[in-house]
Structures are given as C-alpha cells and as structure tokens.
Image (cartoon, rainbow, N blue to C red; front, side, top):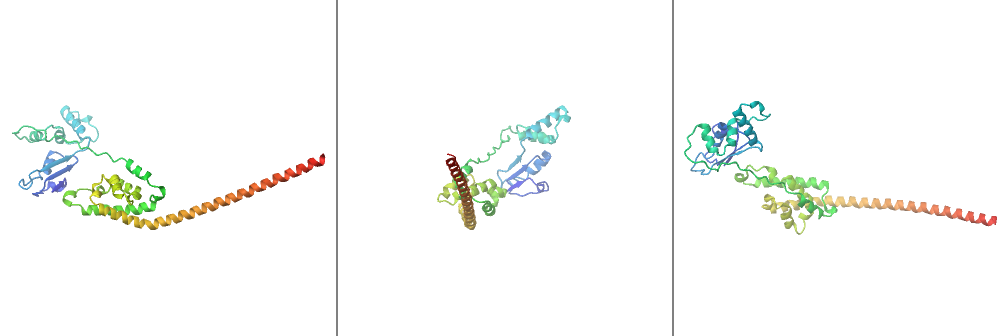
Length: 291
C-alpha cells in the first residue's frame, strides 16, 4: 500500500500495511514531515521495508543554502522573494546524513555510524522522444492515403476510448497512481494518426514496434490496440469514399475549366491570324496597282 502526502496523514491514520509514504513539495517543517513519514511501516512484521520519499523542486537545495546562510549571518533581508523554506527543512535538505540531522534536531543520542544511504538521488528525466520517427513515417505515406481532418477528429475519439480501457484494466495496486494520460499520451496519438496507413498494412506489427515501442501499455495490449485500429479503419471508409468523390468532381471541374480556357485561346489566335492575312492581301494589291 502507498500513500501520497495528504492531510489525512496528520490526523491519526494508522494502517498497518502502508509501505511507502510520498511527499511531493516542501513540508511545513520537520515535525510535519516526520509525522507523515511515520505512517509507513507501522507494523514491521507486515511491512519489513518501509520507505519515506520526499520529492523537492529543482531549486530547493539552492534556496536551502540561502536560508541556512541567512540564519547564521542574520542577514535575512537579503533573501529573495519566495525563499520561505522553514529552517528545519533547509537544514535537513543540506545534511549529508539525514539520520544524523534528525537526531541533532530532536536531541537524540546517535548510537551508530553515519552512512550514505540517505543521500539525495538525482532523478534522470527521460528526454522527450524525438519526432524523427513520426516524421519518417509520414514521409513514407502518399498524401492521398493520409488522414483528413475529419478522420483525425474521429480517430482521436477512438484512441481516447482505448486509453480509458487501458486505464480501467490496469492493476490498481501497481498502477493506482498512474495518471490517465500516461497510458496513451497525446504525442503517441499524433504518431498513430500520422502513420495510420502503416498501422493497417501487412507490416503492421513491425510498424507498431518501430513507432510505438516506447509505450509498454500498448505493447502489452496489442489485441485491443489492433481492434481499435480496425474499428477506426472501418469508420473511415465512408469518409474516404466521400473524399474521393469530392476530389473526382473537383478534377472534372478543373479539367472543364482548363478546356474552356484553351478553346477561348484558340479562337482568339484564329482571329489574329485572319486579321494579319487580310492586311497582307490588301498591301500586296496596293503595291501591284502602283506599279
């Protein structure tokens, strides 16, 4: 069982199966922090490896340094706007050993050596997937086989329903805190819509692995994904037919207009030739008469 930091953790929640307590953001002070952290592993026979996790924003350590220095020098007037972290939290953030700092702040006697197990961990944020794969996919699809705006709107609705089905089918114990958009992000929807013609081709499985291999939710639910793609393809059929007829009518109208313009040009050129020939005949007769 996991807990995100909520106010309920401050008013006597005492569940025996809580393994993780997660605080996102800066607690008011260390009393508030340890009050909530203390809810993990209340029964050590049931939970043998409790964890307390504090997520801090990127600039927290720098602000903690400024606040700790101002506390020592007394120059709190030099603090910037927003540097309002409690000094007890600032010292905890900067401490090389969190357990030592906890004992120091609460006046406990330390009876064991310090370790490095509580050092802050830098979380590697995975960079966004480059758009090169999607752009390459689009370049391989003839323009006439790409989805129209109407198809994309309809397709997005189907993909949103598919995403909801992934979320409903997920194990609440392991995925209870996974937000709905994570199952099928908007970027992945765009990849699917951009490369739809490839996803209904004979190489559809290879294309899915190439285009969406980074999305484990889809790879673990390929049957549902292909059913959704198949349904989309069926509903796109009448739209494709209407678009083809519209394009045919447009081409016919353009051809008729071009023929009309060509006929008018031919008539105009014929008139010019006749006028030139008439002038030549009159000129020749006049010269003959004079001679």
